[in-house]
Image (cartoon, rainbow, N blue to C red; front, side):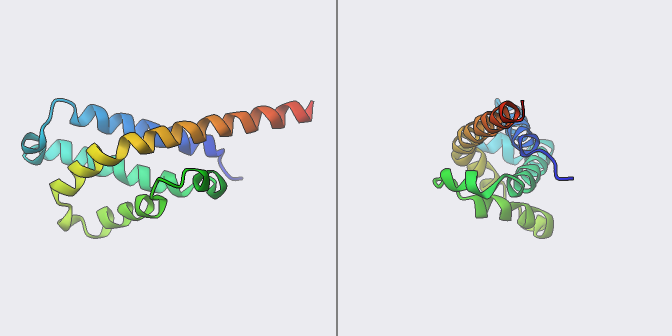
Length: 124
């Protein structure tokens, strides 16, 4: 049985919140020199990558300003080209892309909740 896509939206939002917390108080130089922060960001980006693949394509299509293919692909890069995980790429991803992604996932999460509510109402 397939898992509820809301669960994957929740995983995305949790991973984004983790990254926000993990880089709080850092500037690029302190982030670059903090092995733990970099590893935490990498792991949460892997989660974001995998969870993004599980969201319904029809809802991702409505959020066309988000580069879903790149999000899905970053997990492969982090897993297979881990030795090339440059801190600048991680930092810029966090600082430039996560806020837009978070907003899009919140909208997707709301739509999934509305759909589930409609389905529940129709089954009554």
